[in-house]
Image (tube, rainbow, N blue to C red; front, side, top):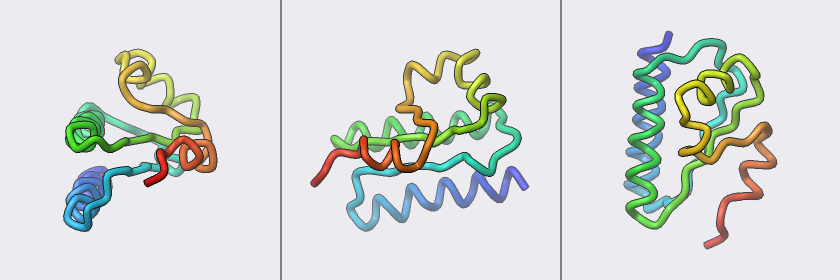
Length: 94
C-alpha cells in the first residue's frame, strides 16, 4: 500500500511539473502511517517546487501523523495545514 501511494505521489509531482504547475497540495487525511521514504518524497517535492518559485503544502489533520512531522522537524520545513481549505487558501494565486 505505501509503495503504491508513494508512486502515485511521485507521479503527481511529475505530472504537475509537466503541465507547468508550480503549486501542489498533498492531502494526508486518509493516511494512517507514514515512513521515512514518504517523508523523503515530500521533501523532494518541496525542493523541486521551491526551486521553480512554486509552493508545496501538506494537509495533515491527524495528530498521530502530525507528530511524525514534529519529531523530525519537518513541520518547520513544510507548509503544514490541518484542512484542505486552509491549505488551498494559502496557495499563492497565479
